[in-house]
Length: 228
Image (tube, rainbow, N blue to C red; front, side, top):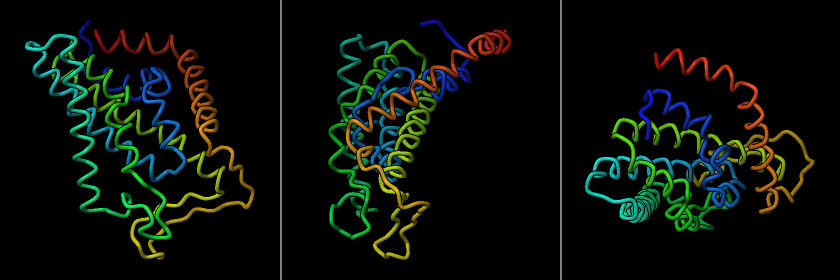
């Protein structure tokens, strides 16, 4: 793989090569985990940690790995990190793990762990790290992790707000610590179905593609100036 400026690799992961809107990776999570902004935020954090560990380890030991073994290592590491993150949340923040713990609970993470552990957003990035140096892999993991989180949170914000007419973020069992943003009474519950997830993901992907195409010429000039 051609060596690039580390900073540009980081920026590419956030926007130009956004895992969800550009590369269409992790679409299962983009559909299942975005019915709640809080759920999307925590799932994104787990994927971020997952991606960082996987890309770093695969890149660090790439000389002793083949392409197939790199993919296997990525899958095993992804599952391990996802499970550990789930255990940490269960131990220190059970509100987002245990269903029915509180009437204000709106983020159930445990059921999404199998999807996080096997998401293409992590596995494909881990396989790409096989051809990257450690700094490049870390930059890509940071950028892609942030880009993935921004994409999921953007989709989740609009899905929850349109579907429920509010954004709820529960930070404790105490009802006084449940942050709610409400603006109207009209709702569209259908947006919370899987079809609604695909619809908004496609909508934002289209906007993203249009913006990228519009500024493609400017991006090439910027890249040329920085790489010189």
